[in-house]
Image (cartoon, rainbow, N blue to C red; front, side):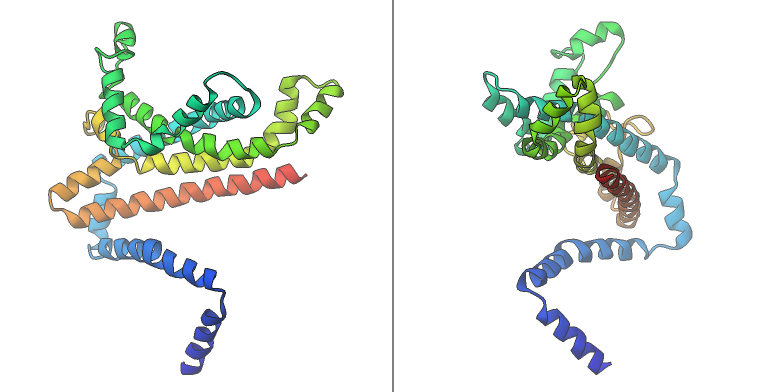
Length: 278
């Protein structure tokens, strides 16, 4: 045991200092908090954990959180790619202003974003008042939650796709055009396969941001159970009720579901890269 520990310790000490810093930082900032959360959740009996994790209210919040996050991230996967394409391929007036505006959700506090969106999309807001006569209510509904998630996650797709577009060689597209391919055929068969893994990466980052969003959604949503209540807000409500173990169980379930979904997205990325190399 001592010899094994000595050999293992020698291997760790022989690692480059960058590796040691990486392992230490990830251990303190990521692994220990996650392990602590699971240990706290495991203090409850297994039956109690199952009851908390699968209660009707919890299942409803999972549905609102993950389904809405998926739709918001996929929507940004489409429109974020289009925005990145325009920013890279075209020169136009006020382009620096548009470039800076894309990063606004990064700099703007999420609570301020929620307040702004609630004001614009309320029944008497600039946009909400236009769709209210059509029977469409945005603010304080699940649709408002989706808009908030879309707003705060857009930069992740744009800023992920944009560098890849900048590095792409346009001669390949021009060669396809010279062989008689239309612009759409060139994009779908030449450009898109190269961009697909990057787009999926941006969608995964956007999805992760949407799942963990709290500040903007708590303002633009009515936070009504079984309607537009999301899991992070339910966890906060449990904490306000001093139900720490219940909040921890819900947090652990949220983490597990997120990990499974992100692993699935990573598998799609690996498939897209393999398809691109063929």
